Length: 200
Image (cartoon, rainbow, N blue to C red; front, top):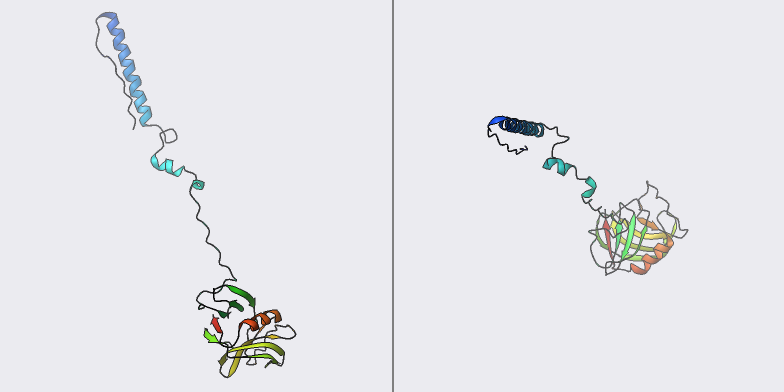
């Protein structure tokens, strides 16, 4: 609320000069009163802005925008996949990582899972074969076995014709197939005793 201060001399003077002075003082008082009424009843559009209105008028762009969360690298080594030199096999992603003892992924590649999968856990390479016929009748090479599930041997291998066909779902096979170049790299790294970590 605004108050308009006005001072008027209402002293009554003798004679006509006193009458003029009285009328002038009354006029000044009336003007002051009207100014007070106008300021008190002013609409919001011309009244002084309130503190809330001032805050609301601040542009939203003045507020700092939240930084976007970094996107997860789909080729990053899976979390909770143990540590040290190892082969990591992600069942859901159908991907293998060859990891050195400094936690660096030396290679990562996609694979074609077998019909029999080992449960998540830590295994070790138990045996290897250079070139044999797979349980599906396909000639394979660089076989690296690391698990046994219900009498089915599970291991990595590459078809010599470089194919990665889906296995027959009616057969129980444990061959995790990959391209020949990936099989060569895995064969060099995954000697007997090397850790193999299977994650979901």
